[in-house]
Amino acid sequence: MPLYQSKPLPSRRTVLAMGAASLVAASLRPARANPMGGTDLTTQPYGGGTLPKEIRSRMILGVNGLDVHILEAGHESPGRPLTLLLHGFPDLAYGWRHVMPILADAGYHVVAPDQRGYGRTTGWVDGYDAPLEPFSLLNMTRDVLGLVSALGYRRTAMLVGHDFGSPVAAYCALARPDVFPSVVLMSAPFPGPPTFPFDTAEQEEPSVRPNTDNQKLAAALAALDPPREYYQQYLSARQANDDLWHPPQGLHGFLRAFFHVKSADWPGNKPYPLKGRTAADLAQMPTYYVMDLGKTMPETVAPFEPSVAEVHACKWLTEPELRVYTDEYGRTGFQGALQAYRVVSDPGLNAELRLFSGKTIDVPSLFIGGKSDWGTYAAPGALELMRTKATTKMGEIELIDGAGHWIQQEQPARLGMLLLAFAKEVGAVDRASR
Image 1 (cartoon, one colour):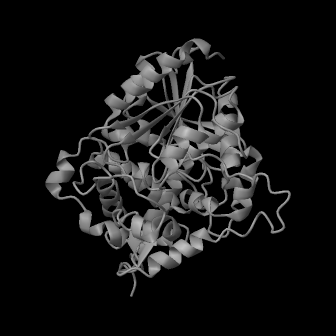
Image 2 (cartoon, rainbow, N blue to C red):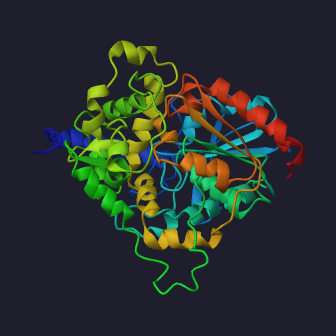
Image 3 (cartoon, rainbow, N blue to C red):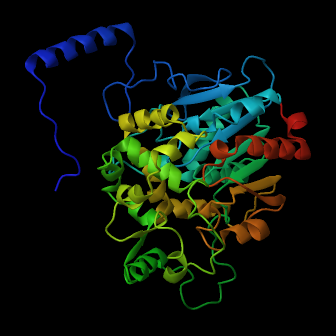
């Protein structure tokens, strides 16, 4: 059965009129290829009038093979220290719009890029069968390093990464502490890089065996009653892009339900630490993390779509603001964003991260989560590993009340206060320079 019904074909007159209008529009602006082929919207005003007036949208060309779309604030005054904000899935640079003016008002040049695979950043190859190497954590770290250089800076005053932006920010601080002298990780704790076995020279058995943990976990989840599936496994599958791009409830309805169910607005989010990474432990999480086997993500979140009254009451993501996400993902699809889930489980790309085996993040660091966000505990044990082994200068773990997963949108004022206090504490403003 098709996921959506086909529409009647337009008349020949309608087709000709649409074609003429398209030719006129094309003559008025330069075309720019997007990852899906054809043209994109990077030459049109961004945000549909929803961006704060302090924020501008522009392209930075030739950054590690990409043309990077950024939002920036505090750009009017030269010489300001740089704050770089990295988004996660399925977010965009746009997700930082509420907190950017707060940081700019405090004296920063604030930049939020659409990361590789997302939004209006181009230069990446789309498709499930495209090589994964360009989406590796180390290459995305090079993307960030290249952007800092392209902007004319030698270092950042503050680097912040949310969700999948968190491991990218972590490897930035791990690999180049001279360029990234402080780091803030949000929603996704960093447990440290994969390590080589230690003190194994006298062992007769091979010290490295194939890692089958993910396969064993998948089998254990599928054996539960009812059968379950970890969300990362689902999002790594070939059909996930089409499921998310063309959901039965429409893209706008799917995204509204997805943002809602992972926020503090959904009363079912009452997270707590899990004992271990077993099927029984993980199955305690909501179904948007540990899904019913055989269900798509749009089907999983559909029962939690907010009411009209709840949508109207949602001031952190209004309907015009959500339409920005709908327009962007409706144009590009999700495959570029989904590649990161496949990278996480790729043996070769994980092996290259052993370059940092045993290395810790030694710059001042901070972790911020939402009190209603399961993301803090989705990888059991990662929070404690981050505090005790992966970092050497981490401050307190900050969990913001009234925030779920989308902290920078749900509670931007509180987040802004924490970021500025952290920057003041580590002296980032004084140390940063062009």
